Image (cartoon, rainbow over all chains, first blue to last red; front, side, top):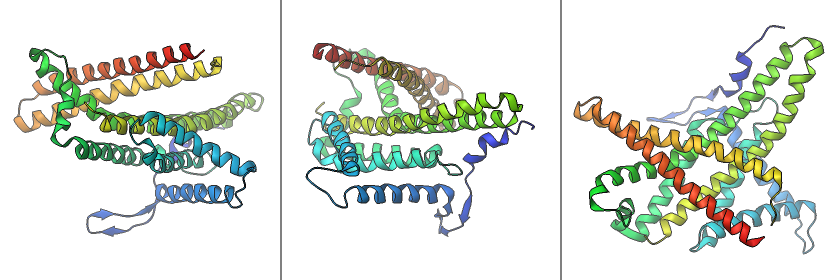
Length: 245
Length: 81
């Protein structure tokens, strides 16, 4: 069989099913939207099923659901020192949504919404915007004082302020880029291995196809780690916004 | 809690990815600011060069901060053991 490398990137193509335009706003239903909704539905149904008959001594499903919730609750309260409890619902929603999007892409024929920079970018900018809003609410115009680090000689300020501003603005970009790059790279590696497996002579096919199994295991792990990192960093940014400077 | 060797490996992998994205993102932001300033003031390529350097510096500054947090966490882990 010939080497069909297009197969490695075909699953990143955005396909528009229904064109919807309201004014200048594009509300088209694409495969990204469909799989995001599917991810949300899966998460909601699974969590509902887990807690359908909640008992004092939990069953397997309830135990898993509680473990997931407690894990996020613990990390949120650990990382947001001030009123960390208030942010648990937001962080749990964010975590389960990203995890659902990451995992749904591992099903054969499915699309990974988080492999689109538009999706991860929107999530990251939303989180960053929320952190800025919190900071403005708490500190008012003192917000800008954070850009001039304490203890720096005045001569160095023209150098330090732009650097601080850039490092502040880089936060949502790193957040979005990391999730997007991890998901895309993982799926592309999976695609390359599968294409190689199909193109190899029959006596060698076991090698690349065997690696795809390992790669899928790695992908499941990365799906968890990336959603965890996204949530932890969001917590860190919110904590930074709430902290006194 | 004693860390498994597997966790250490995982940590290294994540650390590597983080270092990359941190420097790339900061440089990108610096370059974007420089590019638009140049476009606005018709001074190409002065601001592009200056802000590219600022971006790189910001990337390294972020890395330094991450490293300090990471080292603190490691020290805390060692104390717990």
